[in-house]
Length: 102
Picture (cartoon, rainbow, N blue to C red):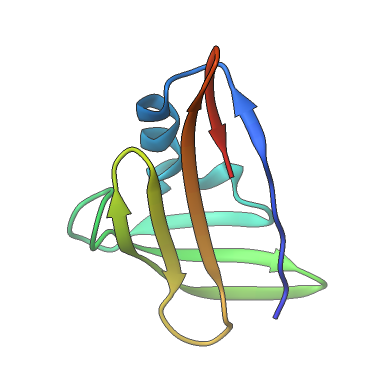
């Protein structure tokens, strides 16, 4: 399993950062993502599903990401439905001047 971690302070509220990060229509912030396609249902939130194509380590990957946990504006879990073990865990906490995204 490949693991990556990011921790950043953003100059916006948790609500604004959470909404942007969980809207997979705009998933260009995800590393190596080449394209995303909404598969129906909600565009964000519990049950949102997207077909995603990515290029990593010389490989072309394709799969379906689905939001399986959603507690706005503090936590979301977006997982690949099958194939590679991939989970995107988003956490947000209020800090002075904005929020921390982990």
